Image 1 (tube, rainbow, N blue to C red):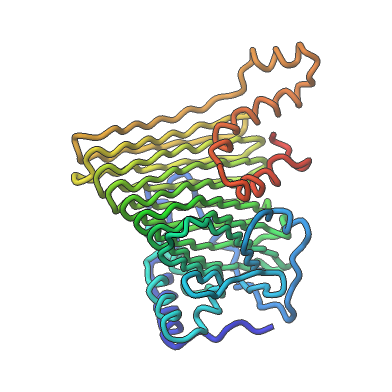
Image 2: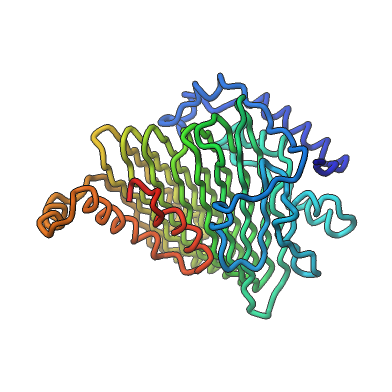
Length: 424
């Protein structure tokens, strides 16, 4: 099975990106934002880029269950588009296609791709961010133009990652653009088909939300016990644009989820919700930056973590309000539920406010289950393990109930509410 032949301009830019990645190198102990997440073991594994499959793979039935109610579905296997199981769209005004197809197009379409691809990765990821651009095979490309119809487009992008005997790496790259007045619901899923095999998922997702557009996004990372994952999500919001993001992290050997939200236009709004469910030796580091650049912008951020066994959760959040962002309203909270004496949670919410007419708040809490509530449930005949699960689900519900899209809620619930969930 062959992948696309990259145009000459892209080959040259990928070579330059590879050179930058090698020059910058990996984050180290000298990087303040990585003080709780070290890459010593990762650096010794020697990941090779996942080989192209000889024949087009089939999408497993358990992966298909993530999707319900989508108008368009794009499946990828180790960075290669699975055409036979996907449903794309190439109509004028709404391009919902694999990036490879858009790159092989001519004229205006390729110019659109070229303009969207040219954004630098998060500086926090150092060489890891440039690695994605240097090595990516494919990913989703959505360009939804100006839309006054009010129709909400529902799109699911599913990346299947499967390891091999030797450590391999996949590099999905997704680009989403929403024109003025557009409305969309997007489900982005990363699922590992070989949970016990060492592999790396290096993901990039770029979002531009134009004036008056409204989107709701669900990102799911269902990772294996030996998966290393680095994700770079960058969101830019123009005037009166609204974006609601929900991110679910389900395990992973070491995960760094980097999120950047820039509110560039007056009246832009962002709702950012996150939930991590961790057990065994999972380590998830969620790093975010919400930057208010214009007046009357709003942001709400709530991140919750449920930890078992020897797992560890890290939250680092920066909330920046520029001098021009008067009358902005922002909040940032992180809460951790510790279900083991051996797990650990670290939280670093940060405010940088340069305007004087704003509302801003932040906070962080960590704790165990309420003993009185646990005793009450057990006194009603509920076994201890079941009582713990009930209380844990109650802790999670505050975040999950923020999801209004039935398509996204189905994807999340297909993980949380199935019989395989051990942490409630």
